[in-house]
Image (cartoon, rainbow, N blue to C red; front, top):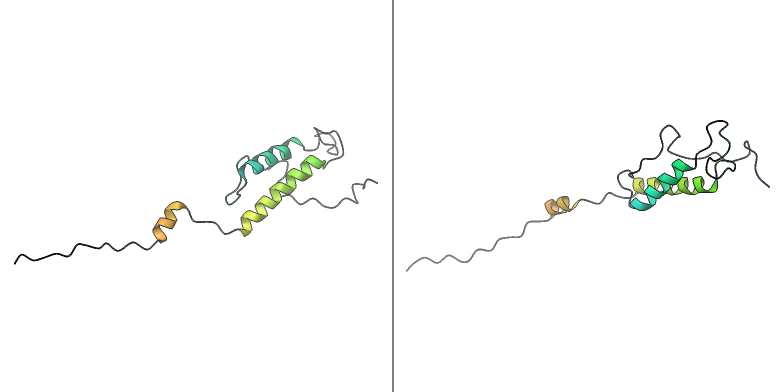
Amino acid sequence: MQLTRTEQPRIRSAYTRQNPPPDEPPKGVDELTGWQLAAAQWRRHLPDDLLGVDCVVCQIAWPCDAWEIANDIINSSRDNADRAPIEPTWEETLEERPRPRIRRAAQTEPA
């Protein structure tokens, strides 16, 4: 049995039709390819412009399965990026390392 519009759960998405997900993921997202594929699917599977009730690609009630999967991937990628500690860059790790002591050869005085 399909749920009516008023019975369907609210959709959680950080993006809107006017502000779709960017091609490049936000800082902290590790899955670059996954983000790019999900963002492309998210943009393709939007509701039609006339009534806004059917997916343009699937021609079924929106949100279609493809859009929901893409939206879930985008949301979980954003959530994981927010929770994950940002790893330092290579240059930052070099700055944090203690510098090795330079051992100099013993200087001998002429006799």
